Length: 297
Image (tube, rainbow, N blue to C red):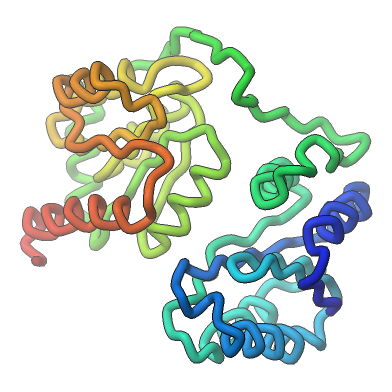
């Protein structure tokens, strides 16, 4: 594998552009190192560089290390060998807990997610990296795009509540429904809550369908959704399901939104941008309540 740790932003953008018409054959694994003073030490960076070069030399592909926090590994072929190599690489670092493997993308499916993540890391190249030709990708909403306010046409069926309760009673660990259309926020939540089973919904309509289908124990709700308001979604969930446990996660954290959410049954409100530890602490609090109710605390 080729390893780039200098001029990485330009090299990454050129590499992504070079594979755009063969994206069906590529995968990308991303690693984030958690913030700490150790990351900036020469010892850590030398160790990381040497181990990246050693552990991945037998694979075809390219590695981009945005020192000190992010590593992108692009590869072709079977997942299992490289996944085990990533685990070995993380264990090899002397700074325990610094490495966190958090995502694998099949680029034939998740090209837009890759572009969003790359442009977050390399903001000056936003809009330069293009899409594969001949494939219809849905464009993500930008911050300047007006959010449509379409009334979603799905309602929770009260008859499903008993079935949902039975489904929840058989679980050994909680299920989380994340209602969020922003790809980066999805990544950050996934990174923070890697030990939980998470179901993703990007619209209010999809959230209601998934809510009835999967009976989540915890729902994390954004306010601004493409097809409606998360506040209205919270209202319907709270009124229909007495066992609902919902927490709002939104950059729209005006006082009136926080009060409205609390009035409608939200158990908490986390403003964006959020700190990973804060989200972990809030979900840990929920998990303790869930274990107590299950009698496993």
